[in-house]
Length: 354
View 1 (spheres, helix red, strand yellow):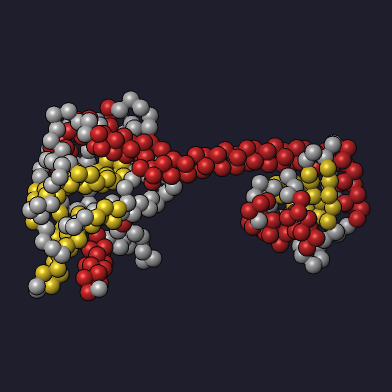
View 2 (cartoon, one colour):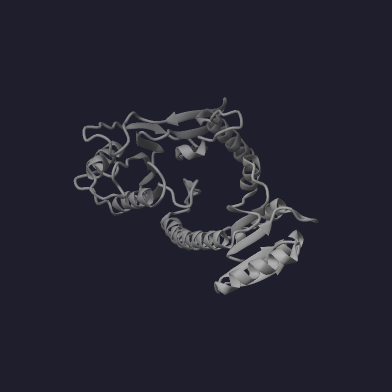
């Protein structure tokens, strides 16, 4: 049975409204003032509240504000009873969170119509909330799956890898991996699919699986430029027929580290540069590692090039997506890549000193 809460300090008004609503089959609770009304609302979680505006102790506006501030009452429909007819009074009531108004003296037919409409809106809100909760649960499960397949740690006598996956939304389009191609060569890559949500996450996992299984035909996975070219042919997103993938593209940084020589070969496709921080005799050196190249999936004819460098010890290589530095500051500016690089330099210095 549907719960309706009446809040009014006038016993006659409460009696008339209660009788009318009970005849329609509603279960009606009463509160004699605003404070009692807020307490009963929290206890009963009514579908609809009818509340007088002018009351002692706590008026209808304060009741409305407190009800709307309660997350458990977010779908409760709030009708404000008022003898005020001015537009500015209605605006004040709407600003407080009221969903509807009933003018005094109350017309019972109008009351019935507004209650029916309010309860329909409440039911729709409940249904939407359930769907939202279900979607959030499914997204959380999907995000958990993504986290479960990503590596977090690797350490041997020559190198140490530490990884963090912190999407800005529950389900993002970033993905990364590192794996040995043979006893000497380690491939590491990070990709960022355009957009957020299910479509972006699905595409990032698809690319990850292709790279992990080395399923790109006629491709040397030790050649970063060749890998990016093969990905661009395998994922032509502008021609995608699947609605999840249509129009999407991704950026990627792909590197291959040779453990025996310290040589790093790398290529990028529209992705932020990796930052190499090296401690030398003269101080801390920062090098941004990036090659020209369009994001994967935009143009079939995109060309990718490879570059290389020698990583001296001790050094730290940072690979990340643009979410690490595209941070909006209070003055409206963006924090930026240079600030991130400076932070990395400072952090590396602290690690070295320890």
